[in-house]
Amino acid sequence: MLETPASEQVGEDRPAQNQGVARERVIWTVGATLLVVVMVGLFLRGVMSSSGPSAGPANGLPEDRPSPVYALTEDLRAQLSVQVTGILEKSSPAQHHAHGHDFGDEYEKRELRVVCAVDPFGVEPVTATTLAEVRIVYAQHMCAVDELGDPWAKSIRVAGPLAVTLTGKEPVVELPLAGEGYPEHVRELIPPYFLESAFSNYFDPQTLERARERFESSNTGRASGSAGLAAP
Image (cartoon, rainbow, N blue to C red):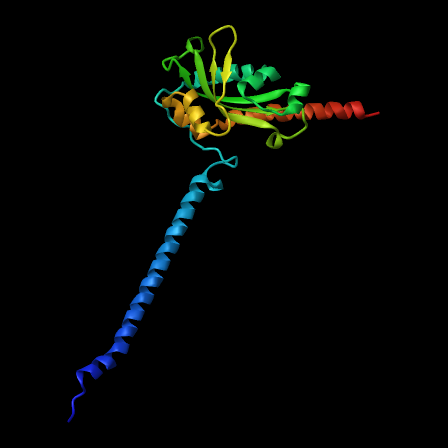
């Protein structure tokens, strides 16, 4: 009986070997594809949880106030909020312009009312516990132009961290320069130990809500007055 030459045996086994290699490649390809899909899904879920609607309240702001090394008492925070709010709301268009606020030409022409909310997150000196001891206030602020008839959500607004120096004859309000290099401008204005609060965009929801209510009630009052004047 003739034996099959070794070269022919190898030729007969090669298709089976090729099929095995092909199966392994398919398995590896499918596995790698599934791994990529899973990783992309986890990444997108992480992005959505950190910056999407589910991460915070409806306005997109963080829910928790940062905890700086030098924290304010709630009493001092409330007093400073009232004081700085008054400073901003009583500022003239020229003063707002000097602060870095840009409300548009209509605001400057008509000297419209501005409604502000202020949420302090730090002071100098950091050991201050009373209003009289505070030289500089660091806070988040939001100011909206009133009297244009727009609702709060669609009003012309400016917001962000600021510093207010309370010493001297007149308070001095400083905002980081807007535009290119803004983060560096924030770092130049706000001390390192308050930067987390400056960049967090946290804003006390009750403070914002009170400002919105004052804004909306002002608009409602003017609308009622206009209707009364228009009536026969």
